[in-house]
Image 1 (cartoon, rainbow, N blue to C red):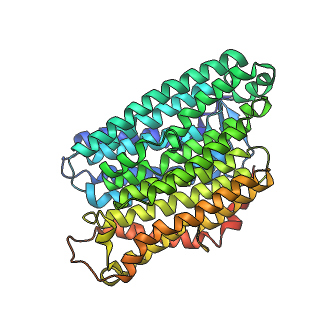
Image 2: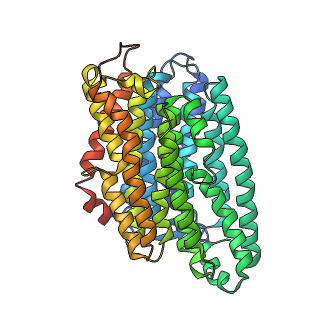
Image 3: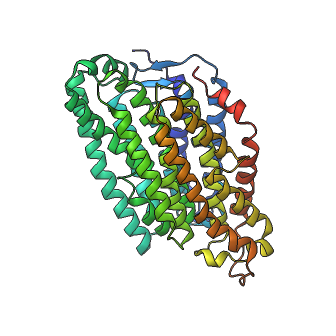
Length: 466
């Protein structure tokens, strides 16, 4: 086996930091556990440095071809690590001095580790293991507050995750049975001669678990309840980071393992993408709670992301556009949630009236991030969405591009329902102080979303297959 532990240095750093954070939190005073937050930030920074240092190395697989080290894995590492750093910013104010602060950051590290392993998994068994590692900590994060709404959302999250996890394992078993292997490169060679019905059943089973990680239809039911019920910083993390692993893992499975089969999997994924973006946008129209609105918004975003998976292996722009869109979405979505975290008492759209007069920079950040999620130039999501649409068109799915374009225009209206009162209406009385950590994170995310748009050409070049 081609064992090379140093190839997994970013993952090792996160694993060691999680263990060290757990031990450190056990000895620190319960009301002063900020060193674990600092440890988490330093671990993410070190893992980022380790990733950037090998960015231009040739693509390869390690540990018996079970784990791929390529541009998709490296980009997944960077996106997840930056998202964790932004999560630290939105959660620092709310969880500061909490007796369970260290536990939260250990769970975040473990979930981030599982998500990164999902992006690099090149073997069905490793994919299932990564799914579990990326899911179990998230169940605990969802119910971290131990209140009624959070517990209800966490229970729905867990039950659906357990069901689709079993479905995923069953699908992996079927693919192994008909393909005679678990590594994607071996399956690519053997699935072409396997019975198409069995291959289709196995693929659907594995895809079901990945759809759960993304929050795509029909595995999306947990998102609105968890987003509304859990703490806002936890909702920001839950609706952002797991999608990175789910989308990249689905892309790798489709582009490698399924590329040699006779199953028409692109049509299935295209239909899922169309239904996901449409349902997410339609449901968001009727939401007054800002967290539920953002929850359904994240569902619609997955629909756009899946468009690139549809043309995996059929368009040279498919993978770079996926990675660009994921990076842009992560920063922009966390920025929108950062505004919500900065104003924790404002739960309804109407309660944001007059925000521009009271907190002008927060209002500007909110407008930038929400319009960014629509795909308004010059934000990074605009560049990501444009390249994804182009890839889908190149791959022969013009009808899906039309559906996505209509959904994009429709999504503008429910975002404007939130922006308009914030910038035009009379101000409502202040109910609480602004969370300074979350507000600063919102400013940084808004600037990042705007600045990375004009730089999208450089990012696309960096995301080309190495």
